[in-house]
Image (cartoon, rainbow, N blue to C red; front, side, top):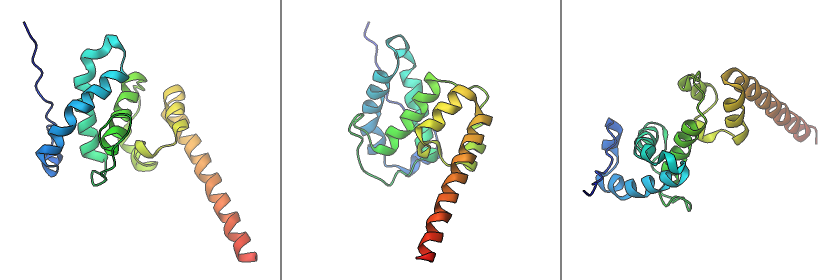
Length: 152
């Protein structure tokens, strides 16, 4: 008996903002990309992860950009969303409240890679400390540059 796969349909109002052909044209490539990123034993989770990637993208991504990700073959905004969903699946951090983190720091797709590592290994509180230290250092550096520019 052959198994038929039905295309994923992001079930969110934000999907209405994208033309149907965009959803259809990228669904299979997204699913193929996610399947290559998860363990061969987790292939059955790929559809769920693809659905989550669509939902994340439709909620947070700037879908106006049309550049295509060379690795996945889908738009960069969708590829970034897929990577976030895959990272959360492969390295779950059960006590993370994502909404406040993204409001305080920025959307996770804009985070430096080390922030994801700190979050996965040490948790949300450690990430906030590291981010605060890095942001303070960046402000100090910017102030030093401004002071040098004014003094010159």
